[in-house]
Image (tube, rainbow, N blue to C red):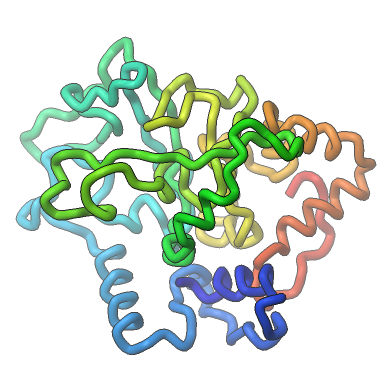
Length: 305
């Protein structure tokens, strides 16, 4: 429910009615690009947003239940400014094949512990995959997308010949949250916000070099969700001026992120590589400015951005 993101999404479907210019609002305060609610929320929704924002920034204590092992004392500690984290805030996801290794602390390694508690040790011999914390802005809009809409875009056998065999990712609610009906209750649910299905895009096959050999639900080690492109230009704003892209944060430029793609993305990558430098820079300039709100486009861009 962030202002720049909502405006951008509505612009993308402008045929519904209204011009994009009518959707833009005042720019958020510096450093608050992704933390402002969309204007026009009802009093109840705005109150829920404020309460959620406070909890997101709250540093929890041992007396409040922190520990004995954990990744950080607050949500914002890993997702600064509601955006993605840096490699320094990274973590390991691990499993044993399709087994999430819950009896060994899986599926996520928690690298911190309260005083007196033994730290968690990453078990030997497990399949592990390094990740940086993903951005969390815009998930309210994604949650509002009907399941039927996502399912209507499935094409597991690439029947339309576009080179993408996208399919929805279904997961089963674990037993330990059944009583609370978290995530919609019992049974299988469409996965939107996890490591391999964070957005409304479908799972896609990627290059072997990016594959982590770790299944996640019904996603194979070679399948990943297509990450959202919104807010790319603002990524350095909440990371101290340095951008980190891809699931592992190892790409610091969009050029490198594009080059690392493969699998079903290989044709797009090759088409980009066939462009001359001026056209590559123009494409990256477009990506950087995409969904960036009302700010003017950057100047002097190069493939090193």
